Image 1 (cartoon, rainbow, N blue to C red):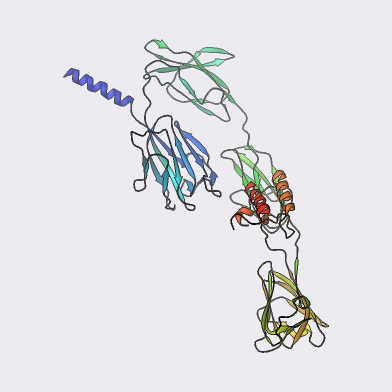
Image 2 (image 1 turned 180 degrees about the vertical axis):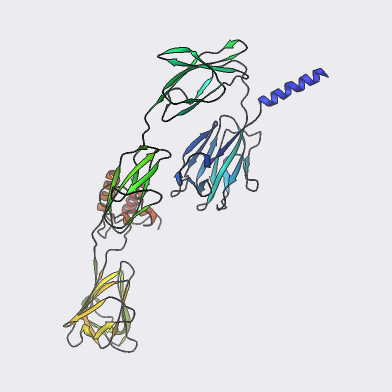
Length: 509
């Protein structure tokens, strides 16, 4: 009986030595800022790596709402450990999508919110991918079960964490581990290159370091001592990287949404529009006029340098569209009828009239109308060049049309701002030409220099902008890969423009 009990006791010890390690990663406890992009973190020997994967727009980010990491469709999360990973339990926040979670090894159980792998197919790493091209999952916590390493019976030196040579700011937590079962660890401080034997410590928990220190440690077991190991930790002055503007200083045509980011972890960003009154940065800053923005990042009382970016609105431009009766040369039908003349991007509609070889003729009737519509920029002026006895004064603004209408002699001018301008024809009116002025060119994909054409000069302008970050370009036209709905101009846009200039078509058309 005693023998049986002894065997059970030995077996129990063996089971305890081989117990699994459970690592809990709660993302709300990592000190992340709201909407901070997440790349990598390590908790108790388990490393999590996040990547945007096939999603070109949305990388993984931490959000205060839900206290969770948001992984968007196409994003990946890699979990890696020194030993085989047996299972991972997921906890999600409310309000997320329903995307499937795919894994390169093992199986993810959607109903049980758990990933597992068979004992015959062990792995120290698993890559999770969020399925789909839209939507997202909100992961609050992961509980990762890792196999315990084979027990080490020979005496080995302890290991410092973090490793020797680490620099730090503020304070640093140092731990010591020894893979030898039941080994004890002792350590001393080193002063001026010599071990201070009076500073003996028995290691039983983290060492908190507030200044530059060197330690020496060894492990012991049953009267045997390991080799000494040393570690030096150097305290350095806290520095904070200056914020980065996206886009950087540049010119723009209509509007920019400027974002700020700081490479220093846990830094708060502040900005000012006059370098006097400062506000904490929380979301993109809209820019619609000439503006300089100052920015600074802070961690506690430590501040970065103040940096600034200047945005200059390009001068307003106009485009004239001319309806010339001599050029149009009539439509071959001298009977009164309604007709439409298109001069891209403006359309002229005549409810009752015709186009003679040398003039437009519009008649008065109950159904008569003369309308101009722009599918691009707003119309800001219409100039009528009339003919005697059938002058522009025979027109008046239709009900609902705003702006000012003035006539003199045979001519007339409308001024205002509208996508559509309508006239009532009170008596017959005749015009040799009609000039419609638009507020500016419509967005032209790839027209980086804003001259209305896509050509090699646009390629030069885009290259210069990407190299210098401050040359004036039409931001909207240069956002080629984002269909003019983004504020980011990057190398993808350059590649798309090169491809267009070579093939005379956009790759996504």
